[in-house]
Image (spheres, rainbow, N blue to C red):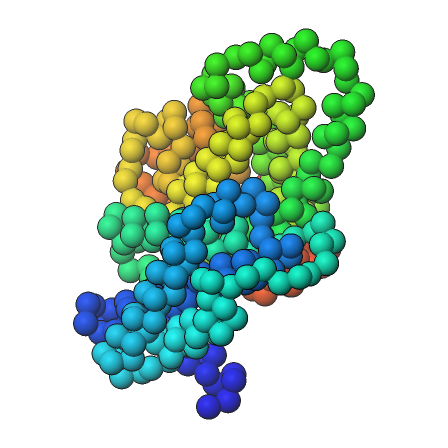
Length: 389
């Protein structure tokens, strides 16, 4: 089988909307075998080439005595599930792919792999951050979407999942580059604002939970105006249109963001907080919270939450921001607190109703590279059916 034919067969097996994926069919074992194989392979690569593919902040995890045992169990699980899928499933491509990736991880050295001598350029790609993030958020939200779905017919591998997974890969593996570009001015600001030291000391002396709440509210107010600005001005909308081009909503859709918008968003929300004296642990907790919260807001999770949705952001509240209906344009800009939208007249949460469709009327390219260039190649004009720019 040619390489392209093999990949097409794998995609058909993952994306099929007609097949019943019940227990005993071999699909579930094949899927989890593939997931564990990819995770195990990524962790083995990070252990093999730590200077290139390991995130320093995760060193404490990799230095834990039981970490390699966990990697070994992940690879063993992928072997076992791959063999089970091969036994149960008439089409063997899922199990065979998982088995090949797991065997490749074993050939590199498996859980006992030792670091290779590589030149440390001071630049790394967070492969371990990607696989750990994918494993945690995937196991958190995929079952939640199956147990409490808003759209029951929507599959795990829905339309455009490959594009969104690639965005997820880019935003996590390039976490160092994106973080540097967003926070590069931090040291300069701190060195040239010695007069703020008393204020910073006062902020640092506040209880941890008080600092965290302040960060949540302050960042959401700033993000509200940032978000609204990207809807208002045509050139900026070209970047944000990429995020709104997703035609299905699930936990992975939130990762679809143009890298320029990611840098600007992180800079304008995080840079001031990093320079005002908040505890580093508070900021780390906030960044982790935002990762999970953003996934939840985009998730295909039901529940109307008519009352709480007026004060705390819920999936239904944010789904209206992505709705294709005219009433959904330019509403619900807040990420955490809908009462901010109430203050500025952009709140919209009709009782018990969800948007019928998602996306935008513009013809945004489907490929990552087409979307990367879209802000500069975009020719669409504002119409009555286009969000206000």
